[in-house]
Length: 283
Image 1 (cartoon, rainbow, N blue to C red):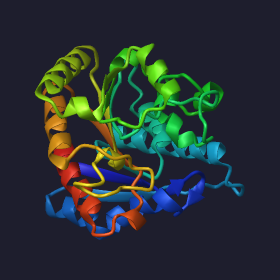
Image 2 (image 1 turned 180 degrees about the horizontal axis):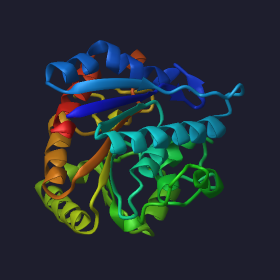
Image 3 (image 1 turned 90 degrees about the vertical axis):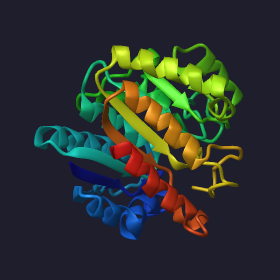
Image 4 (image 1 turned 120 degrees about the vertical axis):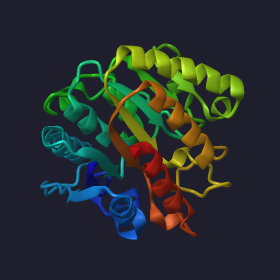
């Protein structure tokens, strides 16, 4: 397989700030070497904003347009896209680049990312990534990303969330998104329900975008992926189990790895876990 690693080294419109340091750090510290050693032909692209003003939302959607172009080029050239991003909202560009009307999303994250400008208490557009992808907010901005079409809620499975704000929880309960919080993803009954949800997803969708925010991992047993990583997350083995289950029913069209801030990964455990998970995601 030929893999194109698409690095988007931005957090909140700023290059190499906080989680924006993660994409290139992952590549320099083992991910690129691992992929090459495993037999993949790896091409690395680092995306750069051309904006002179680092306005968070404007830069986010500018980068989405660039990501979408890279994904479309991957599809034409037969390369597999691996997007390494500081923020989760760059998933909009990945979905647009895949371009299929029946695309699905399997979203691993410690947070729901289901806020909107009307519900957020932080103003942080990164916690709106999934809401944007299903067409709940920033509609005019998203419409400027070529070929973007909101993903139907019923084609989304959210796994591993545990830091969900009250308004997000209400909005999720009113949606058709299948939600498997971290505690549920750890139980046998929960995994059986996840199996049915993924089987159902696979019956409706030809292509799936697999999104992995590394703060889905438990800070205590694995390590903190970033300063926002909530407690009581999933182990690497639990994520791997869910990924294997997903691959039984769904074809992965693109993988996104997001939200890694090496400043919080004091012993490199999250880095090693991320590389290990990429191995499972690309099989």
